[in-house]
Length: 363
Image (cartoon, rainbow, N blue to C red; front, side, top):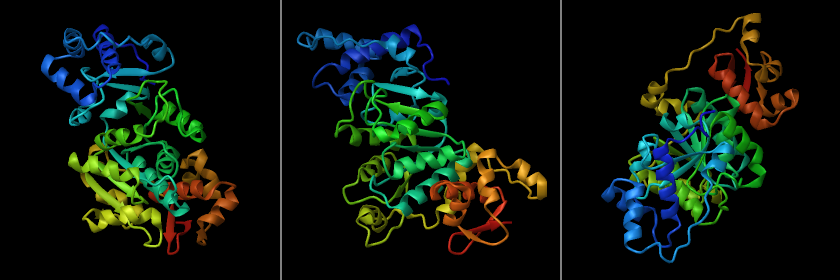
């Protein structure tokens, strides 16, 4: 794990300067960025703030960088060479990034998958398939670790041992929602968790619209699955459009209120993603950056030996006759989402055929 690495002395000085600037009431990220642009560093911006008397009535808060690092966090000031270039394109980039996990993922090509917290089972299944397909191709899946679509997208990526980045609306020390504590640990262990908020900051309502700009900036495209008319996913889309990112939308039922916002994006000209199974065809240049998938040749005992241990239950539940996802899940004693993710991987590997009606059989 590469987050939690030691900061250079210059990074420590810059991080402390930005922490002090963040303590100042009325001095938001946009103004901090302006001061840094004008004076070359966080320390230069802090010196100007001190000269202007901004600190006179602002008591210093206690921020323990060493303790945060001992807890496995990394802190990257916006003036560091490690700070992601894509975030510099924002008019109000976060002065500090707090990370837990593999920081190298910030430099890899990613696609955001966002949508409703109150997603349908079908919407969650679609997000899981998308996450698995993209991650299996080496594309990093970016989302916000919320209930519904976000969590499903992360799980899809994790199911194929792929890369995923979660951007939080709280500090790294406050897992939200609490039911995603296990998901948080899995992402922090194999992927990356990112926050612009101090480690102890709670998930305040205005944090989530702000974190959405980071999701948009870290991704080269945004896929929307089931977004209502007032969904935060639409805020992510607005930021993505400002940054020149591609927007793709999975169409939903006109009778589903959780699809009114996403269907509205299609009306306004967003690209339609009719078949989540073929999502990679939408990103040929992106896939080319991270390499193409290598297929496996099916063949008796050698095939079974080549299947990862976590997928052998799914493989064993299949036969030459097509089965539904629910039938496979029942035979393998797993959830339908887990069964579908496993079937998707086996299909990509050329071991399974999908038949009409979302039915699967061995090739």
